[in-house]
Length: 204
Image (cartoon, rainbow, N blue to C red; front, top):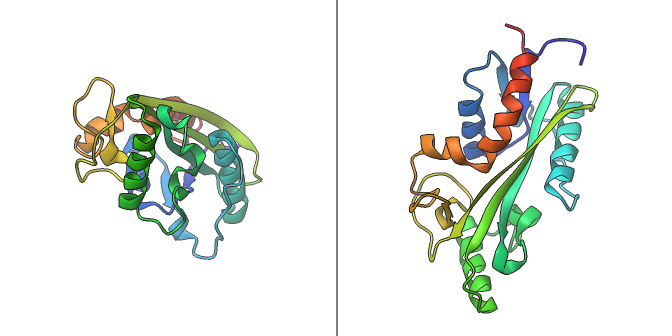
C-alpha cells in the first residue's frame, strides 16, 4: 500500500450492513465512507460463484471506481437441507425484486418440499480490502452456524435475520439485540481478522 490508511470506503448500499460496519470500526481512527458518497459510481456485478470471488470483484471494482481504499464483502445463507442454497445467490433468491419477506417464505417452502428435518444452516461472510489501484491487500472469512426457525421472528437486523437462530441461542438474529449479533455474526467473525490489519495500517 505504501502509506497508512486514513480513509476507508465501505462497498455497500445496504443501510443495515453499513450500520454494522460502522459499529465494528468504531474503535479505529478512520474516515469511513459509503458508496452513497460517490453518486456516480456504477454497481459492480457479482458474477463469481463463490463468496470470496464476489468480495474480491467488489473490492477491486469499487476501489478503482472511487479511487479509495475499499472494503467489500459478500455474504449469504447456506442451508443444509437445500445443499447449501441460496448461498451466493442469497440477495437475489427468488428474483432481484423479491422482498426478503417473500425470500424467507420461499426458503421455508423449499425446505418443506425436501421432506428433510435437517434445519442446520450457516451464514458466511468473506471480506476483502483493495487499494486505490485494485490490488487486494487482505481477505478474511467468517461463519456463524445455527438453525432455520419454523417462521420469521423479530424485527432487528436485515435480510434473513428473522429466520436464523445462531447456535447457543433460542432467539433469532431478528430478535437478538444488535450488540449481541455484532459479537457473534459471520460478519463479526470476518471482522475479527480484518480489524487487526486495519489497526496496524491506520494512521494514529
